[in-house]
Image 1 (tube, rainbow, N blue to C red):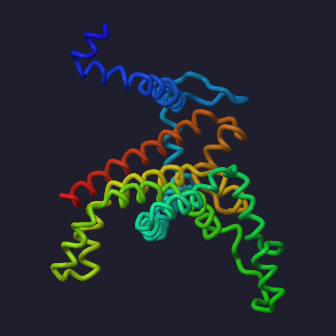
Image 2 (image 1 turned 45 degrees about the horizontal axis):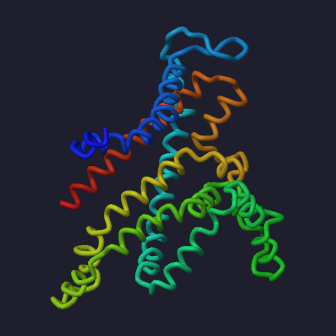
Image 3 (image 1 turned 180 degrees about the vertical axis):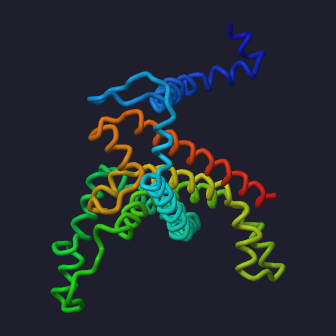
Length: 286
């Protein structure tokens, strides 16, 4: 057996990826096909699932009431990704260009929020942003800087702020990994040829760090699209995303087939966006 493994490199590679492949099969593909099967069933009178094939769940999903929420969720997730990229790229570049000693300190400061539960961090934002009792509004009103509370809670601004706060490290870490591998001799060569800073960035730095941009964008967009804790708390029940509707269908309305249809559509959107994004980046890189 050992001799066969030493002789066939492909067999060794297959055995190495076997545990991960089995994990994905059991905990991702199998649940996905179960949800997909539920999406074509009917809801029972008192909840539950009746195994009668129907497309009604998908027809309901494209009702303007629900489909507008899907589009709005996609818009918020895309805007969250863009804001994380705009904020995270300079931060990642700053960390990657520090000395070895300070890199470790700065990376530690970046990942410390991950040591606290995401729900607790969202509640912490809630205490800052509440309209009448939030720390920001109370402080500004006590200082006489404002007369009426600022609308910081129960709207898309609060949701965006919570999503960016929650997922910014997911953007910074892949960017840091890509930037830290940059060959700085290429940057010095471009500067020696009197290229301005903007061209050095667009022609040298940006193309070489595109893998980090792609990885970070995917790691931010996917959880932002399916978020339900942040909109539920910071949206104040007024600004819902598709994750909240799916959560309500499974836990409150007990309409598993319709919730499964919405989940399948959301997964499909994630898959399409990821493929399109990869294709666009590959074209830009070439």
